[in-house]
View 1 (cartoon, rainbow, N blue to C red):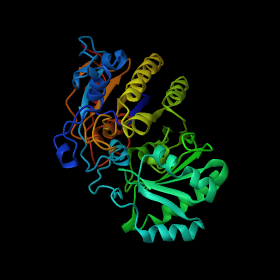
View 2 (view 1 turned 120 degrees about the horizontal axis):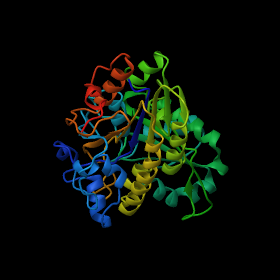
View 3 (view 1 turned 60 degrees about the vertical axis):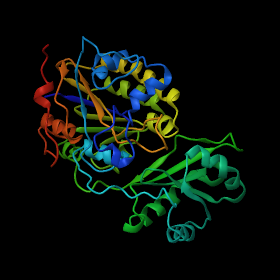
View 4 (view 1 turned 180 degrees about the horizontal axis):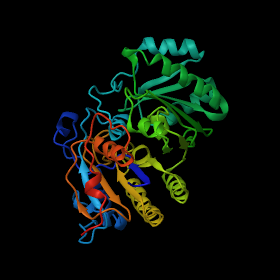
Length: 395
């Protein structure tokens, strides 16, 4: 049994379109491969030593002949390509009905009117938009009027932006709580309501802050996180993990303002003694670079993560396993600003972890099944454990 499992979701780092990508308009998507092509190549020596170069063609990342870990890729069994869909499947659930989106026409007028009445503030925006673009468009208006900025994206989200000083975090969070209650109704139901606070005093100077807060639906059934908590294991969520699962099965939560800080927190936590799961999401790949179609930013974030990953690996103890994966794709060279339907990588290492490829996984839920198998807790309904394939050192 591994005493400590480290699971990192490098949010949106897909490794090539799935066979059904055409149903989502995502033919040809390959987040990491196309990022490399668009930027002259990537330098990812640490992930390559774990087998990344064997999963897809990546300019600058030639397949390694001396892999120090197990590697494979995973297909998504659930429908959709949402953050919650991917994370919930990683923890053993299968989403059979995609979360509702309101990309085309914004939210129904009936919802907006009710939200205005209950918050006591007028709503502006109400459309699909980039979080930075809509601040440039409506930030100054809010400073003058106090109106709340509501917008959505290709995800199943209702987002509310408010100035931290002029409107206030308490007001913003209260508005989001109201919106979450309203959007539990089936005709309005979204996966998450997100508070998006910002600062600044004029167009071009507005910046979103780290005081984001997500109000997610609870998972429709227990996950392996619940099983671990029930049996007394540590389940530590870093970044937005707590929000994605609405706190279900999480015994401790550690916030982070960005990828670099998140990895530093995670590395420091690896120096502590615990028994269970340390579960990290690194959202910048997705939110800052994928949705904004910024290949250069994506490249820089990948290379920074690769350096920090080496530091983390050096902290692994004898009975540790590290898994690095993703929840969907978000090809920064693709059309639109949506996630992309892709395979995700699964890279694993540790002193007692073997070497080389393992069979491609048909569902992300195999990760949950393996965690459950390792700690001998109740298995989720979905997934097949690969514990025996990875828990031996051999070449």
